[in-house]
Image 1 (cartoon, one colour):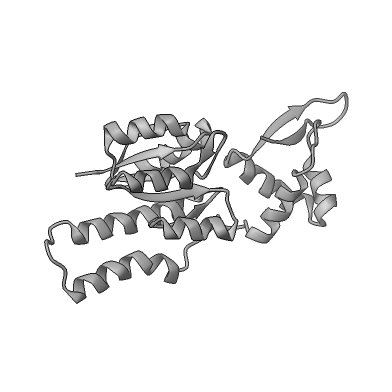
Image 2 (cartoon, helix red, strand yellow):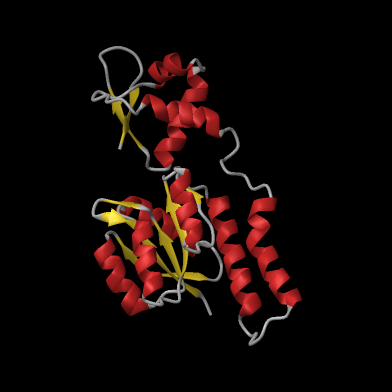
Length: 227
């Protein structure tokens, strides 16, 4: 039987990516997608999923507050935040709320799939057990913690966190006309070819938009915009 997943994210496109990732992972099915917390509460009550893939930042509230309310109402559901929130206090709050894992955006499929597979394995280990002995406790906890001990590729080959952060920081300022790869390269001190690779990766993760402008002379120019 597949594990039932409810995706809660206010960005429709990001939610769709997570749906596709979930359905590529054996043993899971998406039973609902909610783009606001009110709808999420309704779907949680009606659909009774096994797992929530929960964003933290919403225009109308905080996903971790939603998690607390679910716990208070004895909702027997597991939670994995998928978020851009890098603040340590939010991470600690999520841990105190009993989350299974904590995944940072932009999400890489290999990391996402590894987490869901560990989750499924943990659930399967406990499925037909009425009482635990210490060996079963140790085995289940080992599965949960394995993600901390196994080196998983956080990003695709050719993409590293430090350079990616530098590229994204360039777009923190308002650039109404967008930026070319050459303009970004000059700001971070990297080659245009390298920067172009990172920009296209951010486009694929729906973090940047790209537009092609045609000048009077020369090749078309690709300009990148922050979403």
